[in-house]
Length: 268
Image (cartoon, rainbow, N blue to C red; front, side, top):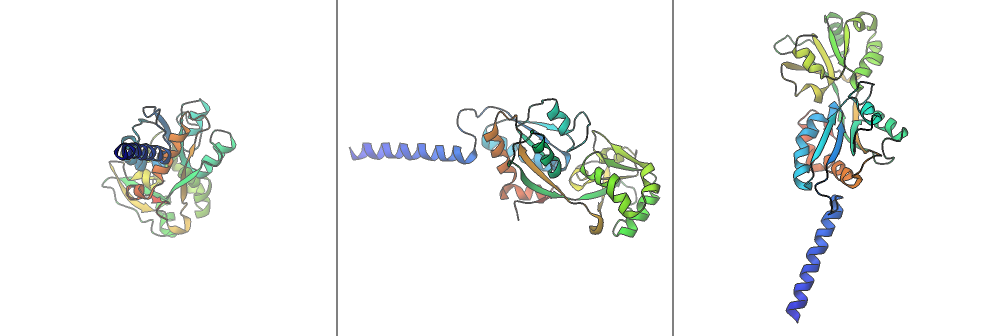
């Protein structure tokens, strides 16, 4: 009788542990094969691509991904994708753009989680001389001297075209030779030789082949962007969405994120 009771108690303990693990993961037990749909902007893409396989392995779920800019009306931007009703459980983009989606009813209020801080930098074609951007004055001289400059259609590019050039007092000289890049990485354009200098989030420049990273904007004119995740209002897997966000924001994910040129906020 004692043996039987011990066996029953052991089975109950195992069952309780399994339920606890399921609750902690936020995944439940009945739909482990259901896909999770993610939309992510470029700033977090390299880190996300490195981390995604670990979540898929631990959760048993396939993660389907759509990539696009945080803002703007390009066909593949995240706001455009959501407006078309493309499937999304998690969206990852610049925090101001995420908050705008909350106001529009596209993202669940209160679901926003800040993941990383991201800085803006410059790159040149591989093998080209690296210009001096170490000070504000050096940056001004470099931008004036550059024959062509490419910048993104998202957060870093918006800052460049609406604020940075004005701050530097060189908008009239530099803006006419600057090209806004839609639906493509700035580094790819620079690698093809279609622009002498490229500006984008550091984490978006580092993975591109065919370019050399020059460095970040000087601290006095740097614009740090916080990239954040939220649960899409139309999510069919909100528990899994929250579990994925916890995974991306975990201390264990921080070293992988840091390698991509981002500052993980979970480490703070």
